[in-house]
Image 1 (spheres, rainbow, N blue to C red):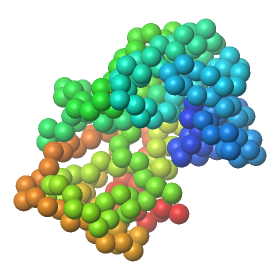
Image 2 (cartoon, helix red, strand yellow):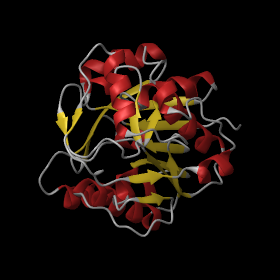
Image 3 (cartoon, helix red, strand yellow):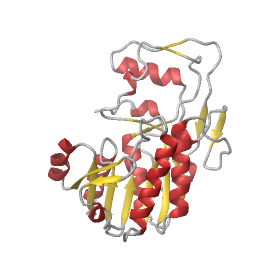
Image 4 (tube, rainbow, N blue to C red):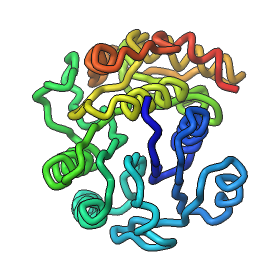
Length: 276
C-alpha cells in the first residue's frame, strides 16, 4: 500500500467512514460537504474539510486545493431535478475541466447498480440491458464521459442497495403495501463492505473499468424486509401481487477476483444484525 493524498467529494453517510478508514491507513484525506454544519466533524476527525457544491458548476472553498491530490473519490448522488440527465452531463464536464488541470492520477467513481435494467436476469458488468430510469441513464452518461474524458485513470464501483448504521432497511417498506409477490431477489451491500471495496480499489491503482459491489447472497425481498422490519419492531410489508415484480440479480465476482477483497456480510440477512 502506497501513501496517497486522497480527496473524497461527498463526505457523508458513506464518504465519512471511508475517510476514517483511509486515515487509519495513514493516508492524507480531504473531504467535501454541502452542509457547513458538518465541517467541524470532519475537522475533528482529521479530515481536511471543504465546503463544495456541484450544481452543476463547482463552487465553494478553494477548489484547486481540493483537487491537489493523487486520488479523488467521487461520491455524490444524482441531483433531484427534472432534467437530471442533462445536469449530470454538465457535472461531468465540470469535473473533467478541473481534474485535467490538476495532478490527480486516479478517479474512483461511486455509481449504482441502477445502471442495469430489471429484466429478470443476472447482471454482471457486461449486462446488455440499458437503464430504465433517469438516475441510471445519468450515471451511465457520467461514467462514460469521465472514463473517456479524463487524463487520469478511472475505476467505477457500482453499488447495490446500501444499508447499515443510520440506514435501517426495516424502515424502508415497513407496514406498506408493495407491488410484486416478494419473491424477487434483493441486491444489497452493507456499509462495512462498501467502504471495504472502495478502499481495496484505492489500494490497487492499476485497476480500472467498472466493478459491481453487492453481497453474494440474494435473499427474497419478502425475507429481507420482513426480517428487517421485525428487527426494527415495525410491521412487515404486505406484497400485493401473485407474480414477482421486475428484478435483476447483481453478480459481483469481478471485484472479488480483481482486488481479493473478502466481504464481511456476503449474506444481507446477517448484515441486518449489525446496524449499530
